[in-house]
Every structure is written in structure tokens, then in C-alpha cells.
Amino acid sequence: MSSQKIGIVGSGLIGRAWTMLFAAAGYRVQLYDILESQLATALQELDKDLHRLEERGALRGNIRASEQFSLIGVTTRLEELTRDALHIQECVPEVLPLKQSLYSQLDELLEQQTVVASSTSTFMPSLYSEGLQKRQQMLVAHPLNPPYFIPLVEIVPAPWTSSGAVERTRDLMLSLGQRPVTLKREIQGFATNRIQYAILNEVWRLVGSGILSVADVDRVLSQGLGLRYALLGSLETAHLNAPGGVADYFQRFGGEISAVSATYGETPNTQEDRETLAEIARQCEQMVSLEKLDERRAIRDEFLIQLAKLKRQFE
Ligand code: NAI
Image 1 (cartoon, rainbow, N blue to C red):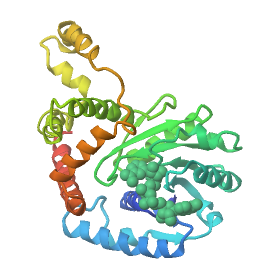
Image 2: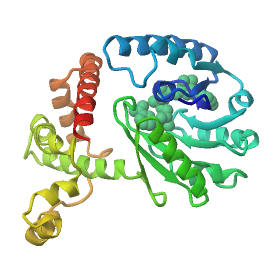
Image 3: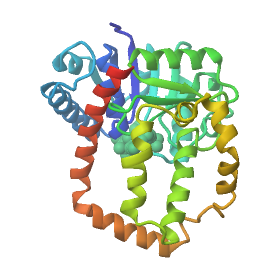
């Protein structure tokens, strides 16, 4: 159990989720936001969420919800947040100039031992840390939503991030019970979105060309491939799918993979192909109306809680 201090910048959806993950592991957490009212709301939400999770037996860590809550403090002063911090997790909105201005401020304040990780889903760390004095202490640690139930964290270094900062962030994520992967170098989309977008592109083509409905194309994942992927990655799936393992798999099916891949066609322009977008939106809203999105999100979270328990039994 640790009493080291973690700073969280931005107390929105992701900032609050990180706060709960760190508090569950016994870290002292200080939340910073520009809005005092936002911090007050965040504290109320955290108190409610921690106790709700405890009641449902889904609280992480070995200490009670009330003890976890007592580890959480707030500040509207960045110089207070950076003081004695082991790690700072940045969770401000996904707006590059906003992140750049925040990192310039942090550059003035960061102590030597502190690593700052951005939760950004899209910005490579060089985009906001280039030119800063303490850029070797800056990197990306990208979670997936909801981070409390999805353990993956993508650690992405800038070309100048120190190997020590990368290693420490990895160890820290492991200490929370998260499952980090470390990219050797930064790349647009990191790994998750590169793979996710490859799927979205093909799903778009299949619906756009009228081959499958939205409900059916989603079933291919939710009733098919996704069930395996909740346990195995695509390469281990291939490894198990041929008598002689993965080398045998590609020997047998490599020709077919290349032949099918050659028929994919162009990358869809999802902003300009308004016809396909309208059709996808119409069918998605038939499946889940906009008023019911929150209800469906709650079902997703409940499912992920149960899946996390099941996964632990298999690991
Ligand atoms: P959000 O809009 O819920 O929260 C942002 C918070 O930052 C708000 O509390 C706001 O008051 C505060 N803020 C704004 N300017 C600030 C400043 N200059 N200094 C300090 N605080 C400031 O946003 P959300 O969804 O939590 O996203 C935060 C980051 O996490 C983004 O980089 C996003 O890309 C990333 N992320 C989001 C995911 C999601 O599903 N929402 C998933 C994975 C990553």
C-alpha cells in the first residue's frame, strides 16, 4: 500500500476514473481543475461512485470506499498539484493548443521525480512536449473508456522521453492492476485506434455497399470475433486455429488473406460520404435511440464488470 502522491489534471470523466484507480491502490490523489465548481461536483460523483461500486461488490483494491475517498483531495493551484508528485496524469479536453499551454506551465513547475502522462486518445506526445525543458519526463498513457473496467493502457514515448520515465509509468500502471503495452516509438493513432479504425473502415464499406445491415455487421463482432478477442488477441487466435500453430496458419491461409485484402478498396471518407453516414445513423438509432444511450452505457458497464471477473478466472 502506497502513500505517494499522484496529481490528476482535469476532473472530468477520465480524470475521475484515474482518481478511483489510483485511490484503490492506496495512492494519495490530488485533483486539479480550472473550475472550482467542477471539483466540487467531481468529489460528489467520486463519493457516490465509490460507494455504489462497494455495494455491488465491484470496488477495486483492498481498502473500503470511505478510506479510498479519504485519500482524494483537490486544488485549483497547479503549483500545489506538482509539489511532491510522483506522477501526474493529464486529463484535459482533447484540444491541442490547450494541452500545449498546460504543458508549458507544467514545464516550469515539474519536480525532477515527476512523470507527466497524457490521457490523450489522439495526440502524439511530441506534439505538445517539443521544445520543453523537461520533455524527457513527458509521455502518453492512454486508457480506454471506461478505464475502471478496461485494463489496457497504451504507453507512448516521444523521441526524447527517458527510458526511466517509460519504465516507471509501466510499473505504476501494473501497481494499479492495469495492463500496459509500451509502444517503441510514437505513431499516429497509437495501436488501439489503428486497429479500431481498420475495423471501422471495413464495417463502413460493408454497410455502405448494402452487403450487411448495421445490426448484422455489429453481430459479426459481438456474437463472433469479439467473443474470442475478449480472451485472445488476433495472433493467438490464428495460432490456435491451425494444427501447426501460427506459421502453419499463414502457410495455409496467407494466400486467401492477400486475395481478400486486395478487394477492400479505398479508405472510406467518413466525413464526406454523407449517404452512408445517414444510413448508419438511421439504423444505429433504430437499435438504440439517442434517449436510450445512457441506459445502454450502463448495460455495457455492468457487462464489463462481469467480464472482468470472468477474465480474472482465466488469467
Ligand atoms: P471531460 O470534458 O469529461 O473533462 C475535461 C476536464 O478538464 C473538465 O473537468 C474541465 O473543467 C477540465 N479542464 C479544462 N481545461 C482545463 C485546464 N486548462 N486545466 C485543468 N483542467 C481543465 O473530458 P474527458 O472525456 O475526461 O477527456 C479527457 C482526456 O482523456 C482527453 O485527452 C481525451 O482524449 C482522453 N480520453 C477520453 C476518453 C473518453 O472516452 N472520454 C477515453 C480515453 C482517453
